[in-house]
Image 1: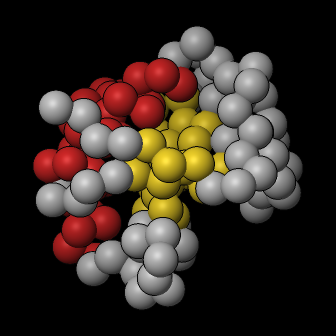
Image 2: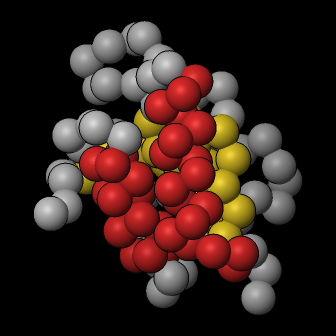
Length: 111
């Protein structure tokens, strides 16, 4: 059973890499297995990113919120680490998964 995917207003989801669907499916599974009822995408292609050659700019990255949409309180570190571990397991070594201050960043590595 999958859980809903919410998109933060303004997320640009067009011209994404073909394999980003795998990231979304893995995130649904990871958040569900961590006991959550939905996952929120906070960034795809839009915005400014901390790395000049960010995988966001060519449609290979997705960021996921690490708090509930109606709260400012972050998930516990244990929940974030559980989500990260499931994402790594589900996606394998072709993808990079990193916990950042306000989100979990996932991107397809250079092929």
